Image 1 (cartoon, each protein chain N blue to C red):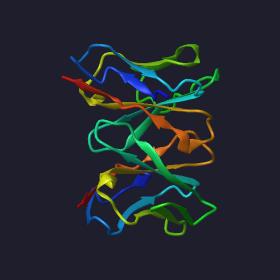
Image 2 (tube, each protein chain N blue to C red):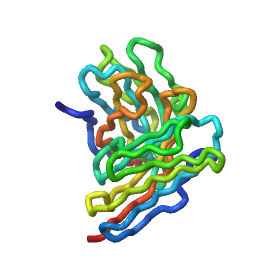
Image 3 (cartoon, rainbow over the protein chains, first blue to last red):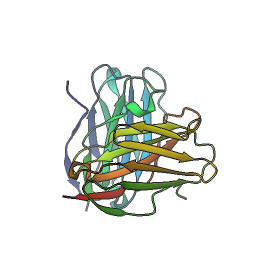
Image 4 (tube, rainbow over the protein chains, first blue to last red):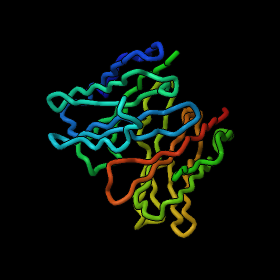
Length: 115
Length: 112
């Protein structure tokens, strides 16, 4: 079946503009995660959604970052007033159940460049 | 402060030989460890995991060893194949948390 998809694959934006990144998880997966990977760094947890529960936003680096998940499926990560330090690859992952940590299936990522 | 460290950025080995990828962690509360493999332009894919109640887990050519006293784990690939060439990430979690803490990754190159 189809894996996790993300769009766009690449995004170049000017500093100060808002951007939206989209994630389509694997159908039926209840958990959805956002990570980012800055140059030379490991993956950094941003936010986690599980079913209808309130999301765990503890990894969001600032209030310019927000995410929502509509209908328990598609998720959008929004970055307002982008800064150059926001440049990174943003990865989305989904999982069929929250405690099976090894079953996080990742999308190919969105490479964001803020000029 | 990095809680999961992969101190060597790269490793090059000959096909058929053993590849050993190392990972150190500082948080003694971590109780579950995972290795992910990542090819260029693709997302990471799960490779193998180990719970802190074990010291070894094996899956085919891949074996992960955990030394809790040293806060160290390693991934052994034997025999290494050119298709194993990728970036390998070590990750950890604690108390069943859904949040994984990743290392910076190590690029493995297996030469034919």
